[in-house]
Image 1 (cartoon, helix red, strand yellow):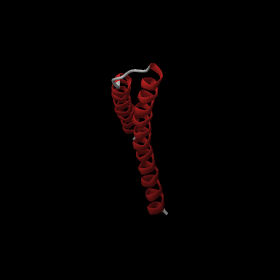
Image 2 (tube, one colour):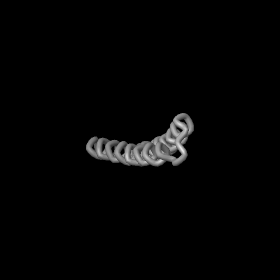
Image 3 (cartoon, helix red, strand yellow):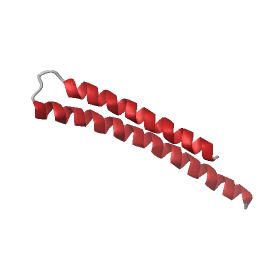
Image 4 (cartoon, helix red, strand yellow):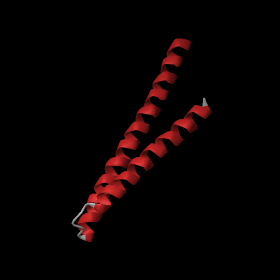
Length: 76
């Protein structure tokens, strides 16, 4: 019975860290498309918002993943 419980705990940990990666990807892709949208709305000829909002989304995604990993590692 103890082996099955260990496998269940490992599966839960794996699922937690898998969702963290998916969240990071969603933040980055969302920021990229937000930048494209803002460029279209402002009528910029050069993709100004696409670059800066996209980079902001990358850093926000990385920061959120690091925050969640640190929070989860402190629980264990």
